Image (cartoon, rainbow, N blue to C red; front, side, top):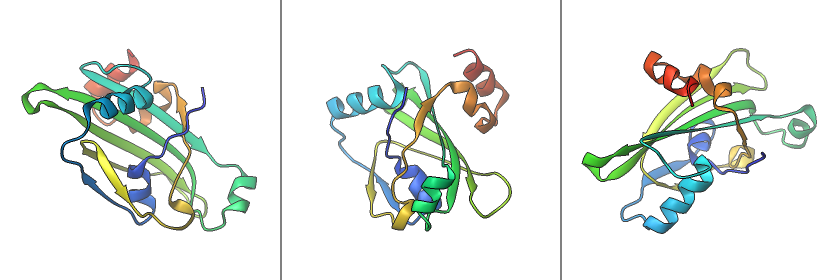
Length: 149
């Protein structure tokens, strides 16, 4: 299933972008966001995997875009002690003119994005099977949990 998603975390890694936690998030909007992001209601720990590989045609139309492929693993974890949901992401990506795999990670609550730039501002990523993002997981217990989802 194709799923278009604007992920501010990606832009912050590969382009100039500022994100900050938003105070007083509307719970109905947050629940709707979670349903779209994770494909259903949240459990204690919920994962979503998104992948995008850009073909030569797309890259030719966006010459300023540096990224040629990316995988994004987003995790939501219920934190009852904080009375909130904690979100984290692990991003793996390839540059079009650099060898090797690159990655980044981070965490936050719901965020508000401000001005990214040029062709690295917005990326469409497609929902993928969780196994496709297993290489982004660094902990053995989390990898085992991911493989059983």
